[in-house]
Amino acid sequence: MGGTSDVVTFVGDWSGQLVATSVHAGHGLRPEIAEAMVLDEAERFREEDPFTDRLAAVVPDHVLTSRSRFEADLNRPRREAVYRTPDDCWGLEVWRGGELSDELFEGSLATYDAFYDALAPRLDAVAERGPFVLLDVHSYNHRRDGAEEPPAPAEDNPEVNVGTGSLDHDLFGPLVERFMGDLRDARLGCGPLDARENVAFEGRNLAWWVHDRYPRVGCVLALEFKKTFMDEWTGELHADRFRCAQEGLAAAVPGLLDELERLR
Image 1: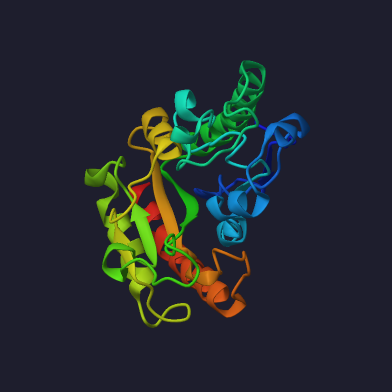
Image 2: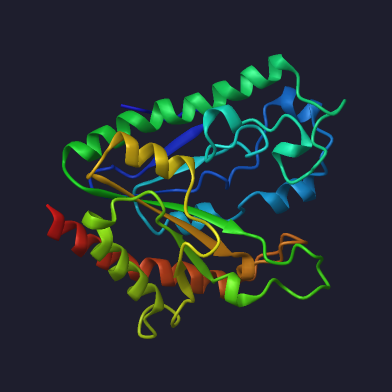
């Protein structure tokens, strides 16, 4: 079974059918990657998903990943997982000389492979017991025009975007509806969250990989929390808002477990 390494750590006993990941929470880099990088650390941090590991931790069985998406993006297909040129990553100048070398590229692919090679046997064991849910926790920027500029319109940017683009809706549709309803329930957590489905994001490679490997068994809910719980320009956490995000997600967990029981 996949174990802990310098790339990935598995927390919990993995005896249940609900697990969580936060694949863009990591900020670490291999020394040789750090040496080759010219991207400002604050700018890199802004494009990562800080604190999402603490959101994922409301699920006892979860995965911690230490490496930055600028070393290997675990939520992109393998052929796109390593940012080599600005066209791969929002126009950002990342590498000294303008492009990542072949040698460093191959090393970063090894990081990517290490994650999926470790996750596969863990999820294989979960899937053998029956249907499961993986909460794929991310966050997204909504003040890209600048710290002093107006935020992106709320109508196109929900507090929580629930990506369900590749899951089996015939089988898992009721589970999705229960989850969405619980996030929006004013009686749960700190109150209702503006949770909407597939508005800005539908889920990417981790969801695709799980749904392909575990058809009619695996269900990934790709969660994108808008960075209202922090200042995306300074990196400062807003503790009260973050606590509400944690409590809102935690309050939706019992409903997921109920729905999974109905599918057994």
